[in-house]
Length: 237
Ligand code: SF4
Image (cartoon, rainbow, N blue to C red):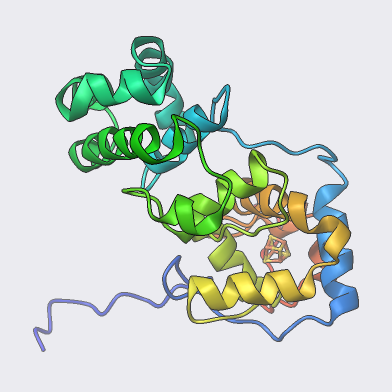
């Protein structure tokens, strides 16, 4: 080993891909945890801008490895140019690419949005299907994107596990798991059914603004009393 190269210190808080795991919460504790983070935001919504199922689907596809705020900077222009699947397919990957170049992976996303728009026209009469299998058959659409569309647009109690929810499920003990699917299944099993649909939003927002990746703000966390994370962070200063 090169003596001048220091081994990086291991994060106390884990990372998005390798979060530290806490002891599994009881079901009662899981319910109390969700109710606590829900208290300050009883009617949560996605932070992505959208007007219908198609614009939501496209916005979610474009949000991979990019912040919602960044996606919201390009989608108004894109949807003004192509508000329907037929118009988007006609705009094509090149035309879409010109309008979304400020977001990460814009070339691949432009191709996917053009291809999924064409498929919506060809197979679904220009409508966004509400069946999981049909959604996941669209280019660029995986389980997480399908879960968001089924939840937000069609009112289903699905759980879309993004980087924030994956970290939170492991760090807090709410639903520890090695894969996003394991965390999803754990959350669906453990969160009280009446809270499940909105829990997707509550958990994302909690992970984005309070239980953050580098260091959680435990000192201002309304769910701290129900969380199994051992190294809770005190207020700065
Ligand atoms: S107490 Fe800390 S680790 Fe637990 S949920 Fe709150 S912010 Fe996250």
